[in-house]
Amino acid sequence: MKELNVTTIVPRDRHPLIFKTFDDMEKGGAFILVNDHDPKPLYYSFLHEREGQFGWEYLVEGPEEWKVRISKK
Image 1 (cartoon, rainbow, N blue to C red):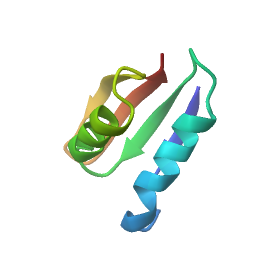
Image 2: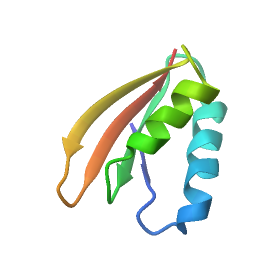
Image 3: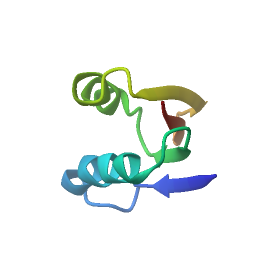
């Protein structure tokens, strides 16, 4: 499964990259997001912008690294 590590990406570019990765995926696909903080604000963006289209599963919850499996329904 593809991992998208955004820890080295400039913060302002992270969400657009994550949404592009999601949008480019086929239904049923998934990727693992690797981040240096809890991506809870991203979750709320997904709820607002892609409601009912995604799955969100924490795999690692800090304190230094977070991994979230984001899937496309």
